[in-house]
Each structure stands twice: as structure tokens, then as C-alpha cells.
Length: 137
Image (cartoon, rainbow, N blue to C red; front, top):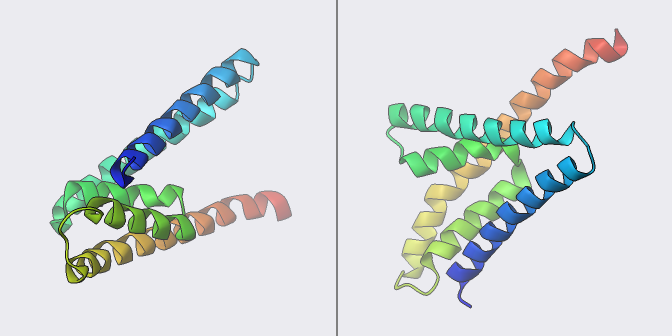
């Protein structure tokens, strides 16, 4: 099984586990879990679509824009890992020189990591500003 096949298998497994989680939430009558899962999916779609629109203004590739937009769901360590896996998965077993792989890494990695750090930082401040007065009132 090649690296590309493993990536596809992990992606399918993730979607399967998501679906199993939603079905289990319904089976155990946890009515609060279904809206949470739905909001996560809707939030990811809206983040990706908004990022594609902003990416058009910045003249970025729509796929790269969507990837950077969805980093708001993950945060730092995961964005680094995903960016490295994307580069390695797309270059492994193909005739890319080490310089081309490094150039691709230098192009994708900063965008993904900075997008994740900035979006998580901004959302943390917004949540703290909203919840802080409720707690310390």
C-alpha cells in the first residue's frame, strides 16, 4: 500500500468514524450531539467557502485557500503536520527533486501554520471577551 493509498484510506476512515459517531449519538438519544456535529460540518464549509472568496482577492489557488481557511478548526501542531503530509503525500514516489520538495514546503507550510495560529488566537480572544464577563460578572 503506497503513501497515496494510505492517505485515501485515512480520509475514508475519518468520514466513516464521523458517520458512526452521528449514528451512535442518535441511537443513545443524545440529541445534543447531532447539532454539534452538524455545526462543525457547517462551520468547516463556511470557513472553506469564505477562504476561497478571500483567496480569489489575493489570487491564491482555491484549494490552498480552503485548506488555510479550515485551519481554524485545528491549531498549531496539527496544521504543521497536515501541511507536511500534504507536501510529502503529493511528492512521494514521483520524480520531484529535493529542491522542488523544499520549495513546495516553503510555499505551503507558512500559510497553513500562520493561518492556524492567527485564527485560533483571534477566536480565543473573542470567546474570552464573551465568556469572561459571564464567569466573573
